[in-house]
Image (cartoon, one colour):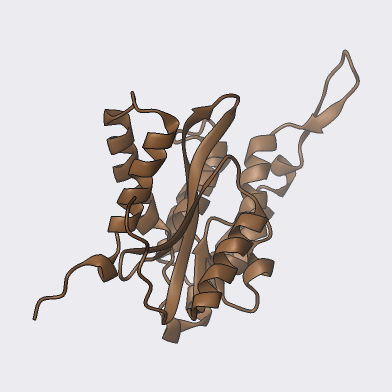
Length: 240
């Protein structure tokens, strides 16, 4: 059995995210991880088959019960997280927001509005909240008629938005806007703006899992557990 996680309760900036490794029967399986970016330390993790707010609640309550003080949370915007961690400041990950827009517009949009929105979201890292709000508002005003354009299916009579994917990309920015610049409203906290520390960590784990893809699910999970456990500064032997 691997050793138990050693904890050193203290004030922390928490980053939380989940990733998936494959199928278990008809369901995906993955892991949800709570991590401290500045120390590259994994504090809590749980193997899952889907993201549930109850799992995040379990992780939050566990860390609080140990004596950790959560000063901020950086996440991918999973529904319910801002309310779960309230009144703790919650930062929506800039990388995830950019990926959402890219998923709707693609990396090579076929329409000018798509190109402009893609360029707009790239300014997240260099804009202030006020600057970004103005730019987004200007985009919406400029393309309001285009965004509201509708098409009718002449067979069914159904009416739908012509540029639904672009509308979804804009809606995502509007929905998350209040969390995209949390770090700016609390400059003294130095809140991480992305979950990239976890993303790169997940990438490393997936490389190892692919190498050992012949292992059973239970052995894969034991291997992942060990990797997550070893990625902790408190496990390193301190030199005298």
